[in-house]
Image (cartoon, rainbow, N blue to C red; front, side, top):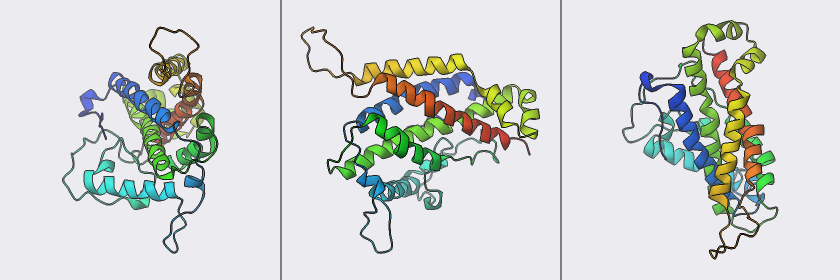
Length: 259
């Protein structure tokens, strides 16, 4: 678990945030590639499989809950403002001393968490796009891979809180009127930069080409290239889900930014 959270208000800038988001792209692309090794394995996340009486969790839900508990208790994962748990009622305090992160987010807005939406989008819309249908029985490994994807995607989307904070600090007067009137449409327009979004989509497509190319021959054969995950699909995932959800987080954050 790596941390790229800013260490002080001085470092909270669009440039530092942009660098973090670019690094996070690598993690997201790699996690999608690793998940594509397994078929859908829907039984892991759709069917109640827990043998404990009264527990109707799917294997994946149970796995994510338990890992979040361990990560919170042992390494204080959710003391890091970059990290947002999927199961808020499941987070204990760390039993070991944790790093004291600076308060760079506005306290009343820092609790924005759309992981329930991310969970639903991931399993219902994204997974069927980039993995093969069917079951192979590797449910535990599949759940672990899904956790990696969920955490990488969640971190990227919730980084919108940092984006919104620095944009608000840079030009508060541009946002205050729309915030006070709760004009979400106006806020969305202020936060949308189509050229930047297109650049991000092209960059993750290129990364998916670079990281995910199937290498089966080293003799110089330049036959048609095959990819573990279609690079155009990775671009689409960013364009249709990750970027819009990030902006939703930014809007939700800004709506709470003024007392």
